[in-house]
Structure formats: C-alpha cells, structure tokens
Image 1: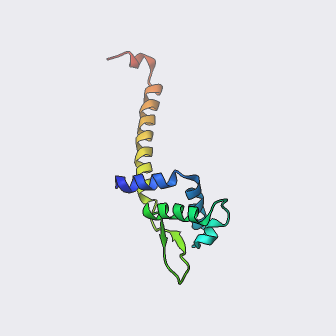
Image 2: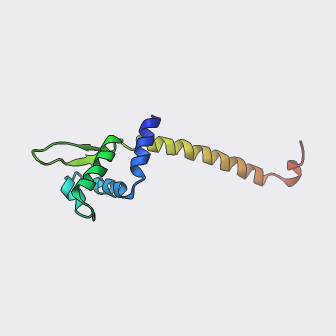
Image 3: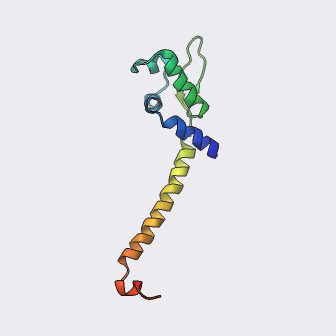
Amino acid sequence: MLTTLDSRLAALADPTRRAILLRLAKGEATVLEIAAPFAMSQPAVSHHLKVLERAGLILRRTDGTRHPCRLAPDALAPVEDWLARLRNSMEANYQRLDALLTQDPEEKDKP
C-alpha cells in the first residue's frame, strides 16, 4: 500500500495534475478537452495523464481515435486511509495536551 500511497501523493503534488483531476470530477473528457484550458502542449498534458494513470488515479479507454479519461473509482482511498490515521494520531495528541493543560497545577507537581 505504501507504494500506491507514494505514487498517488507524488502525482497529486503537481498543481496541473490536481487541476486535471478537478476537471475529471465533472465527468469523462478527452485529452483535447482536458488540454484546452492549459497553456501547454497536448503532449505535455498527455504526460500528466500518464502519471495520473500510472498512479491509479484515472482510467483511460479507447473509443475509436478518442481516448476519454475518467477518475478511477476509489482512487483516493489509500490517501484517505493514511490521512485518517494521521488525523486520529493528531487528535489523540491534542486530547492528551488538553488533559495536561486542564490539570490542576498542584496535581502536576505530584509524582
């Protein structure tokens, strides 16, 4: 799972790839449709799509000469699971800190 998590986080680190994912959240799109709002060549957009596909974040299919892309189902599950574990650990730390800060100062000095 760590490899999957690492590849997905690495793919998400790039703002262009995050923008592509936001576009695909609206629905399936072809490479040309995805490339339209970006000031980069179609091959550059295709490279970003390959990174997203290798990371398991998107799926591509062939429809004649078209290659529509869409979000992969549950693609973010490993990221969400990791964030949930991190969030739970942080909340436990904050709860311990809150308990310490609300302790009576005289109790803190007792062994």
